[in-house]
Length: 160
Length: 160
DNA sequence: TACGATTGCTTGCGTAATCAAGTTTATCTT
DNA sequence: AAGATAAACTTGATTACGCAAGCAATCGTA
Image (cartoon, rainbow over all chains, first blue to last red; front, side, top):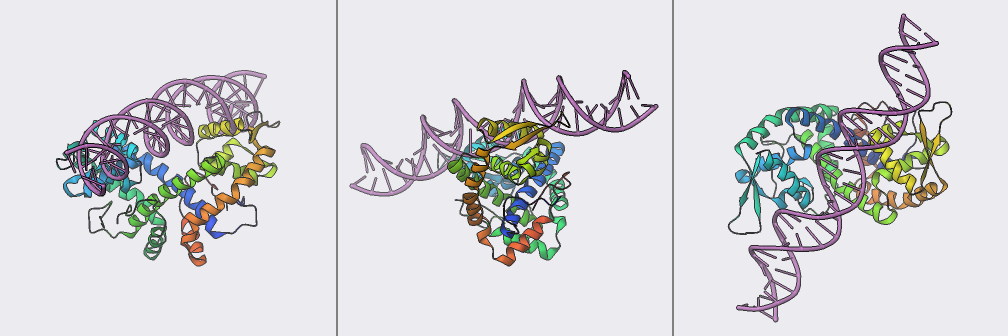
């Protein structure tokens, strides 16, 4: 046990170690979270993410580009993801009259239901798998630290 | 700006916020890291990860199951990933005489080279995109916090 | 007002990773 | 010494996503 990893030297470069843990934790937690979300509501983590974005948007609708920026998926990724949600009847297309290029994605009533239904259990899962490992002070500290990480080209991708 | 996200209430649940940032940061950073690794060395982030695991293993070889556990991929995922590395001549199969079920994956000389060649630039990239956002104390704190997160069924998946 | 650049979105194609099911070898049970 | 169970690995089918390229609509600018 106690294998040294990702560097030859005696290691202990804490930046690197943090990164490795970051990677591993992400893989493990999202795997579990996805599985539960899938089992209980038939949704992908990304599906859920998009749904929630829409849920909190004004008019419960957004331009596809903006969704992409928020969720950190590609434009094409969003097209396909929304295809699925449309097929499931959770989201509907809506034309924009002022700019014919844009197609809004709008949450349907069924979508709103779905969203509200999934939320509680998902939040509980996040709490259990992620947040429960920290006390309030640590949560704040962690949020602060993670908030400094770059979000790529997205100027304002996070959201609070 | 300042959209509230992932919860209806006034929000400010710092655990959730930390989680969202965690997700977003992961997407952004690994995207960029992958792109660079691909461009400069023709490797996936997972490829690199596996290569490094092998590099630090005794005898520069590991059982495929163990790789899977370390890297948090599925067994089948590992089979296919190694296929690629074998085709590239970076890794070779090696039979185990004491247990005919296992096939070691062993780093070839070329693999070792590749590994060493990729390491410097990748570490620099991790430093730039991830670690550089924190001072030494913060790095330690972050590593500590992330270290508490669950690694799924893996008893000892992380590695230091 | 005309035409080049930009923006929003979609499509084709390639790839990485999953799950479920199958094969072979080991181990356990009686 | 079987026969059942389990472990290590592979394979087939499917999925989710990214990139590059394309099409339309809009904007800027001359």
